[in-house]
Image (cartoon, rainbow, N blue to C red; front, side):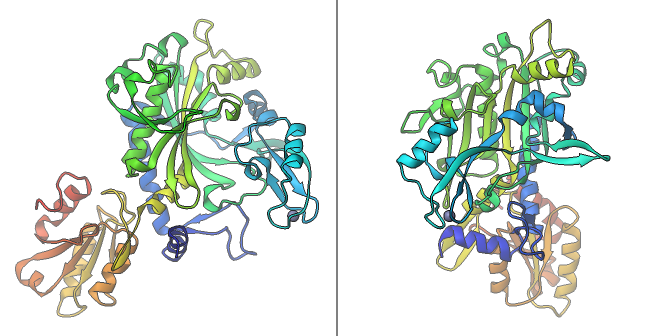
Length: 482
Ligand SMILES: [Zn+2]
């Protein structure tokens, strides 16, 4: 089986991702997925890294409604500009995004895109039929509140955060720059979602916003603080990844603004904290032609995947003063500081795609087992507890240990099958440590801890168990050193 199919199978079988949802009704709605117990635990870990990381860089968390009135999206530009260009097959009626049919498509004018389709003789991938006209499809989802008020589900958390600017400005004692982030659901009506959990209609975003004045963007202390960090940058138009120190990104003309480069580094450091292998991360600059309608510069953090090659899990956008200007104008509310609207620099993570890619990148195969290799502390299950046999009081002691540890860590208790099989079950989902209680445990009040990655074992006193596991998960000690 190919790695990507193994991951798909594992995700379904072991309760990471199920769907489309709701599965029991006609196989579910396409573009919607359920996260099973292990998937939800893993997603929580990813979310935890992001929350902790943003906070460490002094971003403050807020939470806004997912539904907003029409005026908000008129102001933000989403109602008129947030569209995909679509073609329909004349024969089988399937619809496709044109940028999915034509690789590297830069043209945005529908008529010109039609010419390209004719010229390249692009045909329907499912039936080889001819395509009709290219037309725009808005990605916003609509619903009704009350009797007849038409409102929209947010397509990003960012805009809802911007609407808080007057309150936030007061909260931060009328000083900029300041940073805020929001983690929550967003919705996009993808016309024909085809990439499974990679492109869904409902998803969780984690988006950080830095509000900053123009003259502060190139006079940014935190840029100096992290100037030695090395970023793997792929500039637009360049063929190769260049490893550039953060401090040199401006001088070497990779980026224009210190504060923006700092944001790229924040995003990159979070991706590393999740445990992605450095050799599988790159930071790619957008083609100016594919920039979102509000952006001045954009770089994506991409991770190498089996199924889709380099795949975006995070975008860093220079949104300029566009958003606050627009909302000030449309809401007739003051959003400027002495007649200047702050610039906004944004980091946007998609949590589901990040979690799934992390799962895929963690799959290891060796002679005797398939297993998941997570960074310490990232595995969905921290500890599994096994009595060697479910008799002679071994099971009672094991249940006691389970009950204690389960207060602090995510634990499972398993007494069925041989120890070897129980190890395999846990290896398959990357459980960090397996604890076995044997006959010596009764006498000596100690247990065996086995580590998933090395399969090495150590003996630890039960009274020290909780602290030992805590230290290991937080990487305060190495497994070998004990
Ligand atoms: Zn067709």
